[in-house]
Length: 321
Image (cartoon, rainbow, N blue to C red; front, side):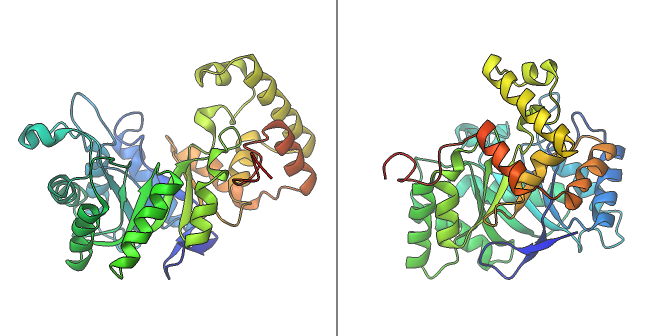
């Protein structure tokens, strides 16, 4: 396994981050246990979850509960994991009343972290993410509650997910004013077919020393195979089918499996901490581990750029000069 520092912190995490969103829905609990055991054995120490993952039969938090029961087996499971969870979404808790709506109020962040810790059967998380921005909450309020949770030892670091670059910059400006570390990692949808973060988010993270995780590295299965069904399931039209077909041909000529190549591409950019691999089965995890041995040549990378050109680089050069 390869390890890297998370942004400007001293924390080392595995280049592959285990995504757990399928646990409790498409992945049964015992299979999830096998996946997490195998991930640890392979050297993956970075686990990603969220309080709203595992929604089933009008119940939320099932994924965190599964992880908590896995931790409870002992054997150093909790101690070996850099654990992240998230807050923002509606947890459908009747006791929240009108505050059940998505957001980042002090009231909600404090209550929902405690609920997450209970489900995860732990007393802290290494990384606590804002799952989305809340345009109705000031950064004064946001940093008040997160700094309080940090000071009390409930969280080690703070992450953001799905943030625009200008909000990342605003957040860091306010954090610096408080002599607070602020955001240390950003998580966005990023893959060959969705390269918009290259325009401003990734450059902002680089400039501010913030790590970057790519969720959806296979574009919902679109980059995991060139079949029409894969493209259709991703809701793509004829143009995307042509791209996927061309991508498959390049991979075939280079002796690469499409999914391996797509994952490897997210690890080439030095600004990226790595991809989140949202596996459903133990077999999927084992296949994902092959990416550590994949080396993409300059010719292959150039071919991928031609098929999936992205926004044209960082702003403002991408649309000006």
